[in-house]
Length: 386
Image 1 (tube, helix red, strand yellow):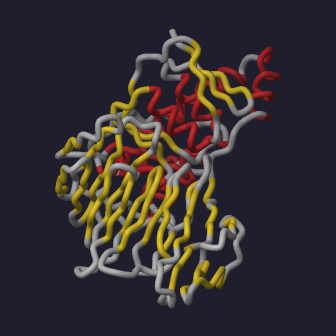
Image 2 (cartoon, rainbow, N blue to C red; image 1 turned 180 degrees about the vertical axis):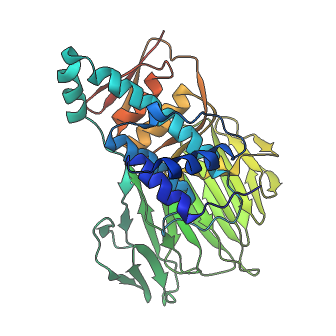
């Protein structure tokens, strides 16, 4: 059952985290929270009473799931946002406990200041657009309005969305590439056919400025979310190395990083088929296909966690029985840090979500409270084995 969140709840939550809520409103807020199903943490006033930086982190993490940013896709599938909020509160409050333990020991204050000085901020909305002539446009500060004209097709920055418009006049397709580095997430991209695309960190999409012929084809690396504009006459094809995903009009996520064990296509709405090594598999909403990056074998997950697959769009690190090495690969991409293991990686798995909107020190402190010990030095995170 989907639980609506009244505006009053957000007002109370904001006041609570700022320490400005009345006893009466606090009791109502706690009563509402405890009425939610599937709660996996207890409301703890001592833990939530954390420094202002952590209060802001908790509030932004919750609101990122409740009130999606204007640039985020409009997911129609129901999302159990309160599960994410609970997990965020649990882990961020774990960081608060460690923060207070360190703060209460005078002999460690110097170390705390050093940690803050070398802290790593989270990634940001930023990307590079490479035009057909090789010109590069950085999209964190690109001017609003027309960015370029190529073979009759125009590129605009419309309130933070990169939009392709017009019909190419040339006989041969002209290609552009949108790419993100580590610690970057692209602004929304609207292709010439109306299809919308979002890129996660360390990703790219190569696409024509205008689609020609009987199909619409793009190539991606890394991770991307698509809302494909329907066209019964021209299927939309996403190529990811050894795999190809074919759709007419649908919403789906593709994760195709080279350093992951498999490529995953998760369907939220509509229908897709994925092909690899001569085999084709059709997906229904809520299913996920995984193509092994070693032997290209396709595996179907009939009841996939679609919310988990797109959590990155809403400021979360998705986790579902995720081991520490898989989580650290996500952290490496989003914070632009290198991961080093001293000894064997800890045998531990995580479920739920962690906020991508906090500085790295807070996230590592949360892991510390779950017996994962890390050292942050410059742009390197060393994970200590047991």
